Length: 287
Ligand code: NDP
Image 1 (spheres, rainbow, N blue to C red):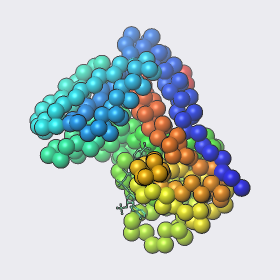
Image 2 (cartoon, rainbow, N blue to C red; image 1 turned 180 degrees about the horizontal axis):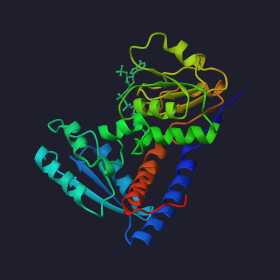
Image 3 (cartoon, helix red, strand yellow; image 1 turned 45 degrees about the vertical axis):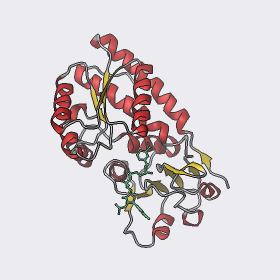
C-alpha cells in the first residue's frame, strides 16, 4: 500500500482563490480593500523572506498590505506604540507581528497588546480562550490549515483517534483544540511522553509538530492512518519533515514536506484577514 499524497500546495491555491473572491466582495460592499499589517523587527533573513511572501500573497488576493520594518534595536515602547496605532487604524483588519522578536523585547506583552479582533495569527490569549471554549475568534493559521486538509481528505472526523505530537501554543495545543472541536478522541504527546511509538500506533490521525527530522517511523503507524507533517527541518538532505517519508508505505494518506502544510499557513492567514474585514464591516460572505 502506498499512501495518497495530500497536495497542500493545490489546496492552498484553491483557498487563496476563494479568499480573493471574498476580498472583492468585501471591497465592493465596504468600499475598501481588506488590509493586513505585518511588522518585522530586525534583520533575521528567514523572517524577512516570510514577511515578503506574506506581503506578495496579500496583494495577489486583492488586499492591502502594510509592511512595517523596524530596526533590531527598536524599544518595547516604540513597538507598542506602533501596535496601538495599527489597532486604531480603520484600514487595518489584521495585525501580524513576525516572531521571533529580538531578545530584548517582551514577545508576550506585544502579542497581548494586539486587539484580539485584529489578531489574525490567533496568538492572543483571548483567542486561545475563545478556541478552548468554542467561541468565534481567530485560530492560529498552521493548525487551522491542518484541520482543513484533514476534513478534505477524511470528511467527518468524529470518533477518530488523533495523536498530536507537540504542545506549543502556536501549533500543538490549538491543533488539539480543533480536533476536540471536530469530536476526535485526542492525545497530546510531547518530550516527556512515555513510549511514543505505542501512543502513535493507536492513531487514525497523526499530526507531528516537533521539529526533529524524520522522527516518526513506519513501525509506529497504524495501517491506513492519515499523517499530517508540520515539521520543517533543514538538513544536509534539504528540507525534511518530522515524519519519515517511508511511512507512506503504511499510511493511507500523508502530507509531503515541502508542499504539504507549509503552503496552507499563508493561505489561512489571508483567509483570517478577509474574515476579519467582513466581521468589522458587517459583510456576510457568500462562501
Ligand atoms: P516548539 O519547539 O515550540 O514545540 C515542539 C514540541 O515538540 C514541544 O511540545 C516538545 O515537547 C515536543 N518534542 C520535542 N522533542 C520531542 C520528542 N523527542 N518526542 C515528542 N515530542 C517532542 O515547535 P513549534 O510547535 O513551534 O513547531 C514545531 C515544528 O513545526 C517545527 O519544525 C517548526 O519549524 C514547524 N512549523 C511549521 C509551520 C508551517 O507553516 N508549516 C508553522 C509553525 C511551525 P515539550 O513541550 O515537552 O518540550
